[in-house]
Amino acid sequence: MPQNAPVLTKKFGDFTVEGYSRAAVQSYWRVPELKMGFDLGAQPWEFMGIDTWFVSHTHLDHIAALPVYVARRRMMKMEPPVIYLPEHAIGPTEQLLKAFSRLDRGRLPCDLQPMKPGDEIEISRELMVTAVATAHTVPSLGYIVWQRRNKLKEEYANLTGEQIRDLRLAGKEVTHELRTPLLAYLGDSSPPGLDNNPEMYEAKILISEMTFVAPQHRKEKIHKNGHMHLDDYVERQDRFHNEHIIAGHFSTRYNARQIKRLVEKALPDMLGGRLELWV
Image (cartoon, rainbow, N blue to C red):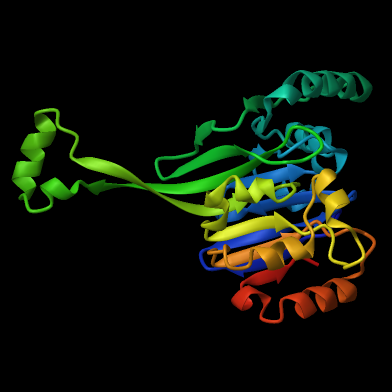
């Protein structure tokens, strides 16, 4: 299989997280078990089979590979993919694809779906995806993947199966929906993207950004540009209830050794061993 873009892979319980993210270079992630991906800054050839993508925002390191991905699926006679992205980007993205189609002299079939904060997408009977507002220099979204299941209401807990059946036949709603946040994808954001969406802190897996880690880089400027600093994690370390926290999107100012050294100095226990540096 062609290796056209770097991919890091890590197993977290029932889920595998694959991808790569470096600030101003490219960001792309997929979770094969969920059959979905996040951002299209590049498109590893092996990711082409995923037909559902959620784009956080329209900076090129997060969306530049969209035409290539769509063209490859068309070439391989695969079904057009579904791409969810911030609603303001639908018109410009359609124009972009039309321009590439004229240059390429080939169709670029895909289903572009607008998203705004609070929108929910039903992926299956068990999975829902919610869009939430994040804080970046262009309109941006984060995404939360929920597992949902129906549970019998407490007032009916002592009834027999026949009694519950009779209530259902009489039109009574005997169950209520329970949701568990499985995965949260922050995209690029300053701290309000987390703080204003507390479900991000509760998801089993959080894919987040830690663009800056050096003490000399000023948080005020970093936040103004819609990013996170290592210190933001130190200040919030008691709020992370996630089982696994992935930090990526590191600035190209740092190499992997510097990133690990600075993070491990500031967070010696790596958030109880839950923090994974994506380098």
